[in-house]
Amino acid sequence: MLIRCKQLIFMLCLLISASACARGLPEFTDLIEQNSPAVVKINSVERPHASRGNLPPQYQQQIPDIFRHLLEPRGRERRPVASLGSGFIISDDGYVVTNNHVVDGADQVTVTLTDRREFDAKVIGTDASSDLALLKIDADDLPHVKWGSSDKLKVGEWVVAIGSPFGLDYSASAGIVSAMGRSIPNESRENYVPFIQTDVAINPGNSGGPLFNMDGEVVGINSQIYTRSGGSIGLSFAIPASLARDVVAQLKDKGRVDRGWLGVGIQDVDLNMAKAMGLKKPHGALVAQVEAGAPAAQAGILAGDIITRFDGHKILEQGDLPHVVGRTRPGSEVAVNLMRKGEEKTLRVTVGALPSEDDGMEQASSNVPASNVGGRLGLIVSEIPDALKQRWGVDAGVLVKEVVPDKPGAKAGLRSGDIVAQLGFEDIGDMKDYAKVVKGLPSDELLPIRFFRAGQPTFRTIQIEED
Image 1 (spheres, one colour):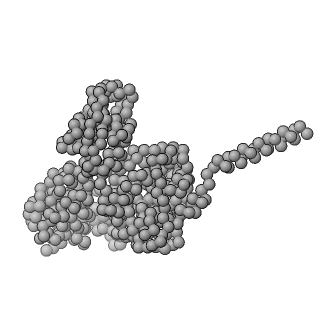
Image 2 (image 1 turned 30 degrees about the horizontal axis):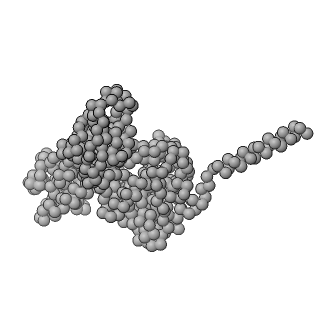
């Protein structure tokens, strides 16, 4: 009898423990049911370009253009390149947020809702630095999400992702916030996003989809995963909603994003440097270089200074500084706390505007000669604005304003924003050089062309059809 009582007590304890555990676990069903209608699937299509061939993109840049045509399959039609991603509706009149890399280079973007309605989307604006894009579809009375505050997120908090991994529509996955403020430079070595790290199962196709907190608010936009297999291994990264809301507002207002600019080159502070500079422990961003005439130089910041606070924000490592500077409105005057030769100093700096490619294109628009309507290359070009020269580190060439379809420039793969620095075997210094060299180029002959794209030099070939 005593043994039976002990068994009953033990079983009762197990039931109570299981019930307590169940009460402690989150319930996702209502959250997913209420927010799924505002999540969309995004299909983008990029038409093939004559100069690209069928080689994988990672190998195309490694093969000289003069040989690429030998490697392309003959007699086979090139097919459009399609990509898949996710997004979410932020207003009932059809504004949609997704990742820039989901729609980058796309000639056609289609948005599919949970009720299977499909809409052609217009790209309102994109921002490669934050990997965000704003789309617009022609519809009204649409379900939409609520923005939340990513600044209030804590490590260990439950979050939910909804998207289309591998094209499996409107899949939900859950996990916790693993870390905050992760610094991950993009392909252009820019570092303006303090990513939210989670262990939520994110896979290809989830890109651009929302990350919800338990109140059903969007606190992040799923952007990247770390993987060796191509699938989720529990390391996913989302763009914080606090940053995304500002970027989206600027894209909606003016189609581009203005970022703060300090004009310094920085590096981390190691233990030895911290001791030498009078710091109790390694922290801050060590200024390795100050650009002449930049806001930092004007404020008196010197190479060797260690920035420990910017506008009240702690700078624990070098990656923290671009995050806070980039989010600061250009023209704002802020306090910068730093260590210089073991002494603490506070300087006032007026934050500048980071030169952008869009800015340079707008500044150049009034400088395009009326007579230049494409010419023999099918390129409308102009002088390079100083802002772009400074940003991309080039001092000669001409800026491509527009590429005429089916002309030699388009067939060579040039795009708006490229800077042409060499044609044939002649260097291009300015518009005068460009006009002279183009005029003398032979027809029906493969010629080298060197240009800069986002500051990176590239060689390809171009052929002018018989005049």
